[in-house]
Amino acid sequence: MGTFIVGAILFIIVVSIIAKMIKDKKRGKGCGCGCEGCTHKCH
View (cartoon, rainbow, N blue to C red):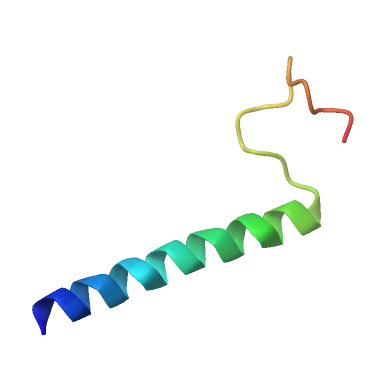
C-alpha cells in the first residue's frame, strides 16, 4: 500500500511539472536560464 501511495505522489508531481512547462511555453516564457547566448532565443 505504501508503494502505491508514494508512486501516486510522484506521478502527481511529474504531471504538475509537465503541465507547468506546457503552460509556460504557451505564455512565451523561456527555459528560465536566461536568453543571453541561447541558440533558441529567436523562437
